[in-house]
Length: 124
Image 1: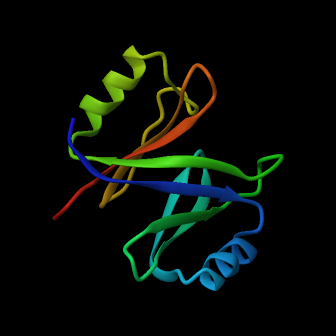
Image 2: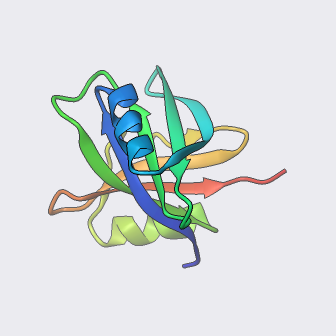
């Protein structure tokens, strides 16, 4: 399996506060991704610092507290998805996969509870 990036993703009830914290640490807003999942509109702010480290912040409203995932971007979504399922991971949305013009993704949770935001960027 080929990775294209691997970085933390924070799902938070207070995205602007979290973004401000990372800005104080030297991160800058790099770009924004908006998408719909399970009928909800979400926006992820992708941040990067001068050394090339990255963190993504997504504002949510339906979690009891913030959650940290690992965003795992791959070249072949289906290959990675199947491998994770074989390892006991489950898609938190059942069989639902978020598909946009530029992205295919699913949140995959391990049997022990850690989670990946599995993504494949789709290029025109």
